[in-house]
Image 1 (tube, helix red, strand yellow):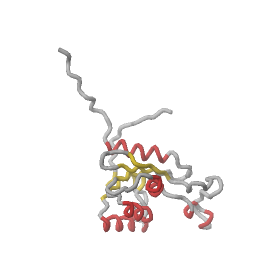
Image 2 (tube, rainbow, N blue to C red):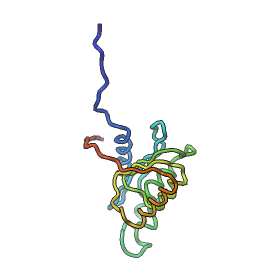
Image 3 (cartoon, one colour):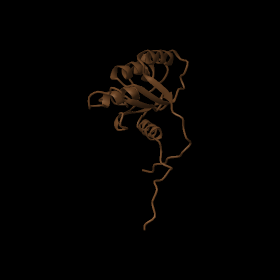
Image 4 (cartoon, rainbow, N blue to C red):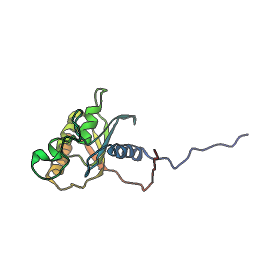
Length: 164
C-alpha cells in the first residue's frame, strides 16, 4: 500500500498573493518618487484587473513632468492617473460590484470616490504614509459613509523572490 502524500503547508495566503501582485504592478510605474500598484479580485479570488500610477494612455511619460513641487502645471499631480483608478478603468468585463482591491498605498479621496462608484466593497492596503492628511481623512470619511471596508495588510515576513 502506498503512503499518503500530504499537501505542503508553506503556501502563501490570498492576501499575500494579491498584495504581491499589487506590489509587482507597482514596478511598472515610472514615477521616480512613488510607485503604487493595485489589483482587483472577485469573490472567487480571480484577478480581474491591475493598475499602477502613470500618465494616461497616449500621453508620453517623456513629455509630461514628474516634479512634485513648483508651478502646478509643471508637476505630475495634474497629469498622473493613480493605480486604483487605472485598475478600475483597465477592467473591461462589466461590474466590479462586491470586489476587493489590494493597493500598496491607502487611496486618496479622488480614488475613494471611484472605488465607491465602481462597487468595490473591500480595500486591503499596504501602507498609509499620508495618514492624517486631508486627502486620507476625506477618503476614510467617504469609504465609511459608503460602507466600504478597509484594512491594512499585515506582512508575514515571507520572502518571495522572482527572477526574470
